[in-house]
Image (tube, rainbow, N blue to C red):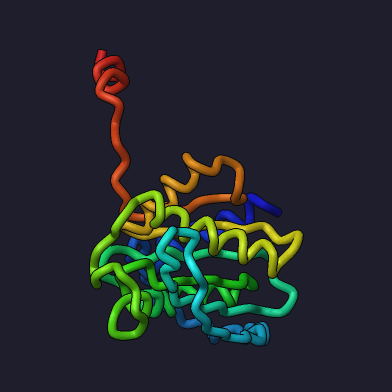
Length: 197
């Protein structure tokens, strides 16, 4: 079950970044077979501001797209200079697959920056990496509290990918799985030398 869930989350992560392309179907003379389409799950969308655990009381814009009887929860973390709405498509696909999705506008981005809210962090800036990762920690635990017993996954792209990677290092085992798309991964120079022998 968990492996299938991670596969769905990974596929959705690849879809949003363009890592997959639609397959080219071969022409056919057979009549198309009607396929019963599953009813789309009912999605309840809520928006709110949550307070960061930093010492400034930074307000973060958050949107939840909840489905009834969810298979699990996915926290989506956007990249630099983006905002949560950039991931509406992946959210829709995850909802259709039966997952509840949580997203924030990262500090200094979207509705978590001036003029929407009076935060001290200028638009486009990250004041402290630990606070940045801490914001995701706050969101993950809010998702866990609101969805008891559900598996929680992280999906991050670009700067969001580096954030979810850092989250996995700082909080090992806190989430069921992590999908990292377009994030840099440092290579240990010693390991790199040894692997070339």
